[in-house]
Length: 134
Length: 357
Image (cartoon, rainbow over all chains, first blue to last red; front, side):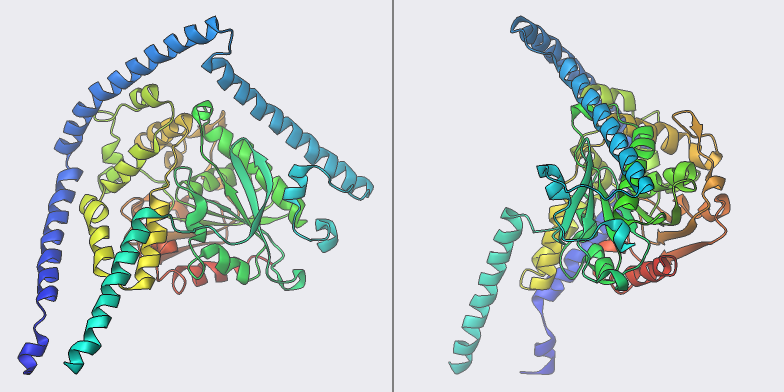
């Protein structure tokens, strides 16, 4: 085998040609997608699509609301507002818990053993109380 | 003949490995985000995790570190895979590490805005971090939109709540130079009707965010990455790395409608933070109130948040201790790329370490 033959790698050549082509393509596409003309076309296409989706969504929601009302079930809006109220309750409980913890620290009372499943998950790591560690 | 006997099985093995790898990456999800951790607090979809420390308390840094990632991608990018995980690296360095994971917003969260994230979620998570760690102060690291949220929090509440130092990674804060910011061009008012999008979908769908981000470099994202995989199908290191990154990239999450509208209107179009006109729930955000030590990390090849989006930040903040760090790499590669463990991480870690005891 001659040195020239050893160095000949057709796959490498194909890859180099491909990468060169890809670079040129990437630059061209970048110029295209960064142009204001491209954004204008994209905006023109998306407007009717978005309008159609919004109209469909509105129609589906109002039809579903009627069905749910007839079945004496809560509507989508009611469920969504329930979720928001639950989050507010969660925040209030969180604030109360933090306030209680602050009071406990202020009067130097040790934290009681946690027993709920949520707290078991949260405190699964073996660790002394944070105050002790600090 | 003897040579043929030796090479033929090798070639077959190679082809078989390549086929196996191809099947693996196209049909399975890589196990990402696996560093041991416990959920210590939840609020709505958000969860605060504490990573299990590997060092005894006396060898750990005293100040806890809280990580906040973007809202539209999963935070598992910070803990991609063993050996290439920023979380694992920091835990091994002795940090008491916490991660605020935003979860996936549903239709019921379409109203969530910056006020909710910055003034309701982050302060409560911070309170829990301080309670669990027993420390009155804490350090904060935000990446991408997480860096934007961290900046707002640091300006509005950081000083009063014990924020000691803040690290911002590829933070999109300054929208002055719109021609340099491809996403700003894409979302100009004359081309993009944000209200119509939200009317149609409620939240900004993950697919649309992903499409917008990929169109910033369409050939590289839609074609180039797959060629890189095909070229290296017999290289397990490259395949595993590609698999993990691809799993993360394709696991995008929607963005709450309220906050998306604010990003577009107040930031991309209005540039209100830098011009000092941004208000969050009626409170004016003044960057001069950001007094914590600040490290601003800029990725030099970032095409999503180009360097111009945070290069002027240091002039605007009130921190007496502030530094800018420019590192080679793109928006994600700067922290999750193969060179991050020897480049960005040690630099960021040593800066935080000096402010953690």
